[in-house]
Image (tube, rainbow, N blue to C red; front, side, top):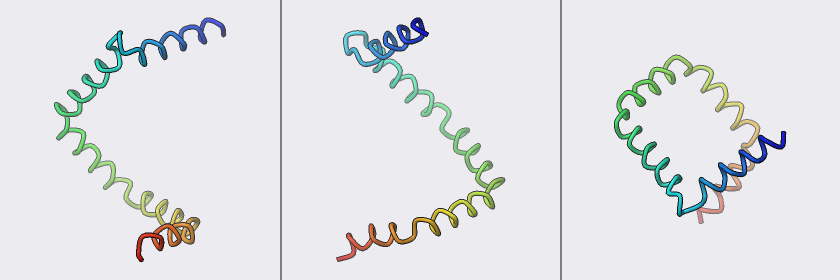
Length: 80
C-alpha cells in the first residue's frame, strides 16, 4: 500500500510540475489524437447514440422528472 501511495505521489508531482513538461506533453498528445481521429470518433459516437437512443431518452426523462423544479428555478434566474 505504501508503494502505491509513493507512486501516486510521484505521478501527481510529475504531472503538476511545470519543469518536467509532462503535463504539456500529455495535453499535446491528446489534442493531436483527437484532431487526427476526429471523424472516426464522431462516427462511433453517432452509431452508439443511435443504438442506445431509447435508453438515453429514458434516462433524460427520469432526470428531468427528478430535477424538474431545480431546473426551472435555475432557468428563471436568467429569464428576467
